[in-house]
Amino acid sequence: MPDNSGNRKEVKRYGDLLPAMGCILISEPFMHDFYFRRSVVLLADHSHEGTFGLIINKPVDLMFNDIIKGFPQYNGKLYLGGPVKTSNLYFIHTLGDQIEGSTKIIDGLYWGGDVEAVKEMLTINQLNNQNIRFFIGYAGWVSKQLDRELDENSWVVADSDAATLLNTDPDVLWRHSVKSLGKQFAMWANYPIDPLMN
Image 1 (cartoon, rainbow, N blue to C red):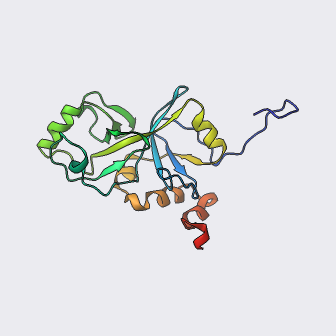
Image 2: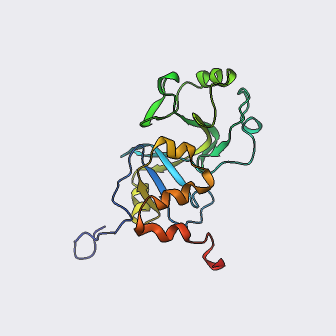
Image 3: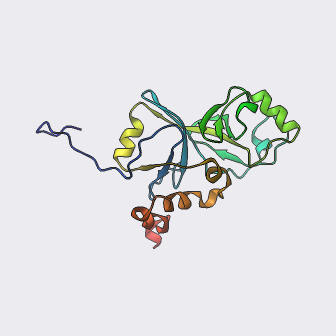
């Protein structure tokens, strides 16, 4: 943003990575938004047109088949992917070409694909918490919106891997992700959710 002298005013961001497909966004500890408080968002698409991601550490309390109709029985968790289109179902998985039309996000992790193939695999019990994760809604940013939030230090961009994202307990994933950022962010992991309670 230019200042009155015409010089560019530099905003110091947390971290050095830029957002890209396969990166995660880690929310700063005092974000109070219902969806994004202490959230970890996996970016499945990022371009000059906008950003699409899924909050991966917010399971809902209801059973999958109580909310999602027209699907075979599935005993895994359902996650709140974000505030946009919460009536829609999204999924990430480790199955690659076994689900036609899926898109690779990072090594060993894909999103989307043929829903009918997913239903068939559910029917024959080929899917479980370790190889697929279902979400209602997604997190979306229009062009430049995420850049502004990064300039405001609302998020840190970080790398991750499929095993960490799928196998870490959602209740500790935010804290685990913060710790992976290094000493600069060590204090974040110990901040109380409500600073007034400290």
